[in-house]
Amino acid sequence: MQKSPSSTIWKKYLSRALVVLCVLVGLNMASAYVHTRWDFTAEKRFTLSPATIRLLKHIRQPIQIQIYLGGKLPAGFRHLAESIRDLLNNFRNYAGPLIQYHFIDPAAFPDSVRSKLYDSLIARGIRPYNLQVQLNPAEGYSEKLIFPGAIVKNNRQERAIDLLESKISDNTLASLNNAEALLEYKFANAIYHVQQTHPPLIGYMLGNGEPLDPAVNDALTILSKNYLIDTIPLDRYPYIPQDFKAIVFIKPEKPFSASEKLKIDQYLMHGGKILWFIDDLNASMDSLRDKNSFIAFDKNLHLEDLLFTYGVRINPDLIQDLQCDMIPLVVGNAGNQPQIQLVPWPYFPLLTPTENSPIVKNMNPVLGHFVNSVDTVGTPGIRKTILLTSSAYSRIIGSPVKVSWNDVRIKPDPALFQHPFIPAAVLLEGRFRSMFMNRLDQQTLDSLNRVFPQPIADSSVKTAMIVVSDGDMAMNDVSAKEGPLPMGNNPYTHVQYANPQFFSNCLEYLTDTSGIMQSRNKTFILRLMNTTRIDQEKNLWQILNLLIPIAFGILLGLAFQLFRKKSYFSRI
Image (cartoon, rainbow, N blue to C red; front, side):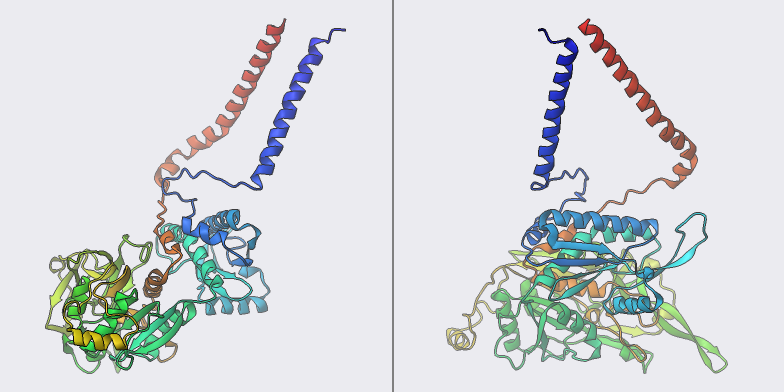
């Protein structure tokens, strides 16, 4: 008996449907084991760095992440929250269920619990932002307290993430865009630190007048939070132990002897990392408290030859910049009360981070106090990267420098500030030459080799150092009411600059063995819509958005009908 054409056609369609179904089931089963994605963005916005992927693949304990961006949020923060969700889902592609996260709305808790939660988040370094927002067009503007932060923890320790490292500027979109560019680094870095069982050992150098008082409270807090820290009295130690991953000098005041420079030199030669915050001139605001002016003079630290050998020179001068911080000045009296006004102080420049290094990528300005200029010198085998510079409107005042209150009473002439982008911080990387090469006789070398745990070396292994020409940059003010403030915080305006991030990133870069720091190099291009054109062509695009899908559906239906008719008539 011959089969009807209709039954043959149905069997053919059924077999095709079964094949398609099997393919779909196979793809779904394969997707549970094989993860891939294609990133067609120019800046590779959705591609994780190799270091982050390595970190995620080696997670051994569950990681809990709490993000405090839940609930109703303004559009910009809502987009940031979605970006965090996409990133953590991407993390889970490599770490699987070991990454667990959830979003929390701090405002959703009862009043008694909410106030304690707010205090807890602030104590952990997650600062709130009180914004005027309009969550619903039918409602007016209202205040919304937002905590753009997260807590990353495992069963041993936790780490807080401040997603917005500085107060939101007038350009909110740009601030949130920068925050989005740093998401991978911040979450990967937090995961890396909570998993660390043996944090790097950092040495805080003493013996040459370095402060160890409330003025370095913030620096010591950052060090103790992320590292093991110990002090090293350079004048009493026979050598600097190589157990220290890095050493930090903050504003030394006394000259360095030849033996002390030898200790520093040999520590560097055998792979040690050094972070310098040095003032070449003796200049401070304390000198202006009791008198109207002072002369900034050379401290004679005797570090010129050492640093010059390594490829950098701190000049005996001061930078003046029209892009600067504000200080209070008595401008008159009303009755018995002095009239105080905040005025710009060119000796406190707001230093601009370059885009040359992950240390300062996407960072806000860094506050400096009486900053010296820095020059780099030709040194074979050393790569030099400028990290901080003055603005386009700056100049150099050579020593001897007279600093006077009268400098702020006279409006500066912009024509005099024609020395742009003066370097103030530089990263040096490579194989350094010893300052003492060919300078020590054999008898001295033999005696030193009996004291030092390793032979005196003429050149270093591959290592790095960062030289900053301002000791105050890593120090903090102390308020009579609030106690020690964060470094880079103006005690009069309470504007917070990026000094803590710069200090922390410098140490992170010098001690980083995971490579996660390189993920700070991401740059997200801010593609903004033309709001004027949107207003002018709004009706046109609304009509097109309505009609094009309908027209597409009609054309698809007509094409399907024509295909059916052609197939039917071809069988007759």
